[in-house]
Structures are given as C-alpha cells and as structure tokens.
Amino acid sequence: MTSYVTRARGEHIFICNCPRIKKKAMKCWAVVTGAGTGIGAALAKELTKHGLQVLAIGRRSDPLLQMQKECHFPDAIFPLAVDISTDEGQQKIFNAIPVDDSLKYLVQNAAVGVPSRIEDIKREDFEYALAVNVTAPIMLTKGFLPKLKNSGGRILHLGTNVAFKAQLGTTTYGVTKMAFHRLYEQLKVELAGSGVFVASVHPGVVKTEGLWEHIRLANEHHLPHVTYFDWVQKEGKMLTADFSAKFLTFVLMNTKDEEYSQEWHIHDEKHWSRWRNETK
Ligand SMILES: NC(=O)c1ccc[n+]([C@@H]2O[C@H](COP(=O)([O-])OP(=O)(O)OC[C@H]3O[C@@H](n4cnc5c(N)ncnc54)[C@H](OP(=O)(O)O)[C@@H]3O)[C@@H](O)[C@H]2O)c1
Image 1: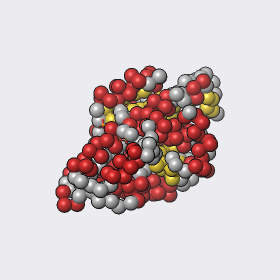
Image 2: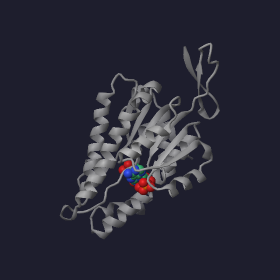
Image 3: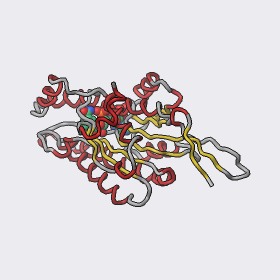
Image 4: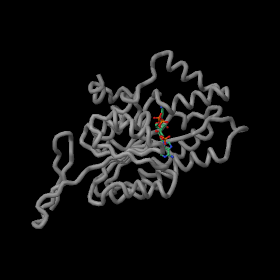
C-alpha cells in the first residue's frame, strides 16, 4: 500500500507502508523546457512556490542561472543547459530526474522559428524548428511516459494563434507550431485511459526575449504582421510573463482531470474568476 500526502508549499511526500521501509521522502518534479527566459522562466519560478522541484532546461546556462537567482526557492530549481533537439540533450534530461522521484508536469514550452518570406527561407532554419518544436516534444513525451503514468501526470503544450492564421513570413514558426498543435490532439488519443492528460494553452501576447527578437527580425524583413504587435503594445494589451505564468499554473495545478485536456485561452473570460484574483 502506498499513498501521497501533501505538506506545506504543496510538497508531495511518498509514504510507503512496506514494513522494511518505514517512510521514504520522494521529490515531485516539473520539467519546463525553455525555462531560462520569458514564459518558461516565470513558470519555473511560480511552480517552486507550490513545492515542486523544477528541472529548468535551456541551451544557455547564463539565463537559467539568472532565473534561479531571482527565484524565491533557488534550491528547488535544477538548471540544465542542453539542446532539447539532440539525442544527447534528451538523454541528459531523462537522467536528471532521480529514478525514485516522481514527475507530475511536463511543460513543452521551448520553441524557435526564424521569420522569413518563402523566397528567403533556409532549409536548416525550418528543419531545426521542426526538431525543437515537434520532434523534441514527441521524444520527451515518450521518454517520460512511464514516470507520468506512475504519477497521473500532466503534459502542457504552449500553443499560439499563429499556428491557425497563415501570415506572410511565418512558414517556419507557423507550420511547426501547427504540427505541434496536431501533436497535442494526437496525444489526447494516444494517452486516453493511461491516466496521463495533455492540454494546450494560448498564453496571450507576452513581453519576452523571444517576442522582441521575432519583432526585430520581422521588421528587418518588412513583414506586415509586425503592425499587429505595435497595436497590441499601443493598446497596453501585452502581458507580462509573470501574469501569463499564473494562468499556466492555474491550468496545470487547479483544474480537474475531466476538464484539463482542452485548448485553454488566457483571454477566455469563463475561467477568469478562478485564477485572476491571485495575480492582483
Ligand atoms: N511571447 C508570446 O507572445 C507568445 C505567444 C504565443 C505563444 N508563445 C509560446 O510560448 C513559448 C515561450 O515563448 P517565449 O515568448 O517565452 O519565448 P522565449 O523568451 O524565446 O523563450 C523560449 C525559450 O526556449 C529556449 N530554447 C529555444 N530552443 C531551445 C532548445 N533547442 N533547447 C532548449 N531550450 C531551447 C530558449 O533559451 P535558449 O536560447 O537559452 O535555449 C528560451 O529560453 C513558446 O512555445 C512560444 O511559441 C509565446
């Protein structure tokens, strides 16, 4: 017989009733890809407030260490500088979670996508985006599935409207993000009845390093959709990563299994009353 109890800060402790092993403390993890900057960094910090140990992944060490420094619970952050698109990186990610610990949340947040018109598109940019935005999430899901099944875990995909709206210059980001959306739908079918749940979330237009870089490159290529970002900014509708991370945390931790597996939109007023008070 085994059971979980939840302690202060939501820390999960695994109790084993085996007579030889009186009591064993087991850590409960969340894996967040792309956790050095933007939405991923804000979410990693937020999740530590709920007693989770966070495996924070990014290619560069410096932003990961900076994020850890800013976190109220730095000991709960485990920074890991790897490229999720490589076999070696994926293996390091799997090895980072101790065998006896549990994994509750896999947040597929890292994404890339160089904007360019079809005339200028570079094969290596597209193939790299496919590897980061689609292949890596598939392989991370596959590798972590046994742990997720053990914990009744949840997978969260960071989606985007760009996937559903073709605009000039967004082939790489838009097509790979659409494939990523299709993966979310596929996983709902593949994982039905497994006890593992998958959701997709639209985080809004969020002020992040990734967004500024996208706008800079889109301006360079004179792509018309930058005017939308100018408008969002002028209207004061750009969100902070911290605000968006509160929403993601609500979706991950405060929703029932029956409702979790859906496409969540931050601007959907239906669920505001359930999470926005916390952000004031
Ligand atoms: N910001 C928005 O308005 C917005 C809107 C809709 C959806 N989203 C989605 O939200 C997610 C986060 O976006 P963001 O705006 O926070 O972007 P961001 O600041 O660029 O964050 C992406 C993170 O992913 C990491 N990363 C990229 N490639 C990686 C790889 N191969 N291996 C490991 N880490 C990698 C980057 O760090 P390194 O460079 O150090 O690897 C970076 O920290 C993305 O999925 C994006 O599509 C954002």
